[in-house]
Image (cartoon, rainbow, N blue to C red; front, top):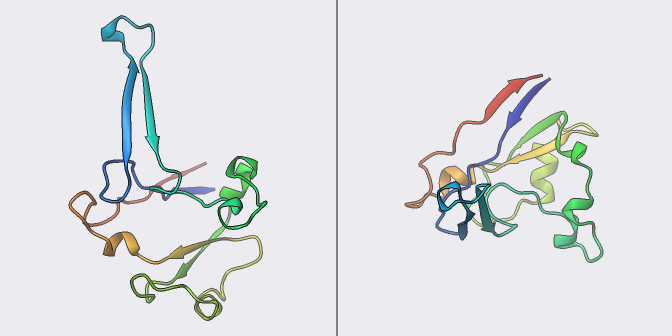
Amino acid sequence: MRVLDLSNPIRPHFRWTMKTELRASHTRGDHFQVTVLTLGCHAFTHVDAPVHYLPGGRHIAELPVEQWMGEAAVVDLTHVGQNLEVTAADLERQAQHVRAGDIALLRTDWPRRAISPTTPSSPPASRSWST
């Protein structure tokens, strides 16, 4: 099986606040090095849990990890303009190749278009390995 890691690195960003705090370190005489990372749940690479949109929906910790790995199909939505919605018609037209059970990856290329001083000019390459 080929695995692709599509996550973006967590680093300073123009839109999302992140903070690191060194709580313990060897140089201070502590037995362990401990760093705490604080960031919003809707920043960087993430998946919205059903509870984000649906009252009574499941929390991300209640979803089986197996659902994040499997056969995937990329749905090309690069034609959708900035801050416009992806419509049912877009999905019907562009996602005909998606099979039942596939993980649908919606490609908007937004990271390539939303450039700021703290975002790279292009997203990092995906990492891949075989098992």
